[in-house]
Image 1 (cartoon, rainbow, N blue to C red):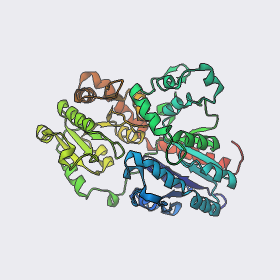
Image 2: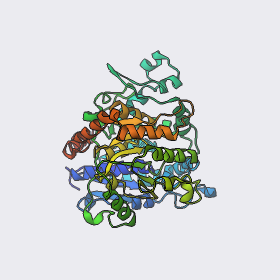
Image 3: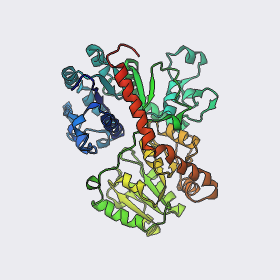
Image 4: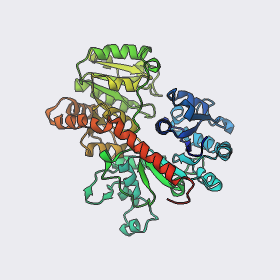
Length: 473
């Protein structure tokens, strides 16, 4: 490796909502000539998209077997959050922490210029310090979500003076100068949030503690966003004094024809049905692989789709409670929607579906990666958030005028099929949703502009070149 080249080591958490953006950033950096070592476990690397052949020499996929735990706490094939029920994810964290020594040996041998880390590997702070290698945090948050969490730092003197109880802060939008934000959690989201990120777990370190250690040890934070969409939120958060670097939306590349999933059976059936529909008439319904729905929630979504009267394409991951594919949907749903929609249970090529001209909108969980993929094609959004930062994303997307959020009970978060149907119809066909649809179509100018988004990566590479080997920024 020449002295002018940059070598970066990537250390993502073991969730595909993290692994995928880290790989996308790796590929984007490789396009600019950066050498990347992407660290994960064998099964996760096999399940990720292939690195383009022309970039493969610059992206080294480094596999470390996930250490096993005593007492069969972790199934042998469980290497990502997707593989486990929620209550078992804490043991995945325990096994992940055991990777710190092999990763330390690898970094000691390779001596990269930079380490880019996720929120979870807090032990990377010590490794980076011991080896005198600068570290950057790649956050999965939007700038809006980052601003929101910036008001929760109890160690900040300015925040302490406001002396709001924590539960009030969680329900309060952040202060962003003269801009009036609406980004905050709802009452029903707060308890689950704390159970997820602040509660003790088998690893001995909560997600909040991990995030704090990584943030304090990092030279800068990189965000998957751009000023054209989040300018009002891309100001320095009150609890973060280091550089905040937007790296663009990291748009996924179009796969070469020979590498696409077009020959696979799911796409053959789906594309045939979509080809028969009118342009922009179909709602895509998809909540990814990480949402753990109750039977009531799935059945109410189904009821809402049925009541909306709209054409739909629903990709449903079979819930753990379902005895079989038939049990995953309410009795009579298939007959009531026959000819108007298609339900596919299991994996399907979401990117190809969203790119089809028959799709006009999407009902989904407000995950930021999925929002980017959908707005890339100008589809209107109907958001029904469930976990982590999805609620904050939903409010930001509604605030931007490209989404409508399904109404829910403020106390327990329940929703009805009628709530879902009303939101779908407003977004897709009602006159009151025309401005919403127009703004979503205009968003393509930002979300579909590859040259614009690539310029952010180029700027980030300049930062990596200019500040490598320095002790401060």
